[in-house]
Image (cartoon, rainbow, N blue to C red; front, side, top):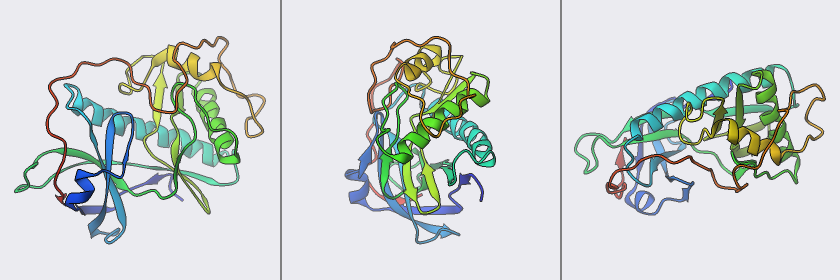
Length: 246
């Protein structure tokens, strides 16, 4: 089974209420739920995500999201291949879509991806963790694996998604690297990696030979939400308030 879970669609619709009252939100994005109208997933539920405020880096944010998802898929594909756990870990691979011409918000970009049911968060990029249940600990192991398998260059974290019969599907992962910001504003760099592991505990899903950082330090306060480093912003444009085809 492929690690990447794709849209496999070319159109979707979101009604007015879905856009005016997003069913979910993260630290810096809103999420609306709709349905695919064209393609192999026609009739299935989907989501679109957009920023709460207009940022001078908005285009680069989307690029960073896609770059992060692809790096995440590389790491998790190997995690699956190495059979680190007895279930499959998959990741939504979003696409940048634009609202079609004729809509009041024509040209507005959104991240489009399949819907994930029974959403929950397993850990954050600041070191918060939900390790009181098996999947929470398995995802902590995945984070450690990512650090080990890349020789300490990357840390896959901020893991969230839904648990299914055959495994888990993740969305909006964070990659932290040695170069702060290389994977967007949620890449907290070396200090972020130190903070994450300052709260980390090895569990039954971790291998004894997996590499841990030699030094840790609580630079960032551990919180459930996603932590971003400071970036500049411009005056906020109006958020999406109308539904329509995408």
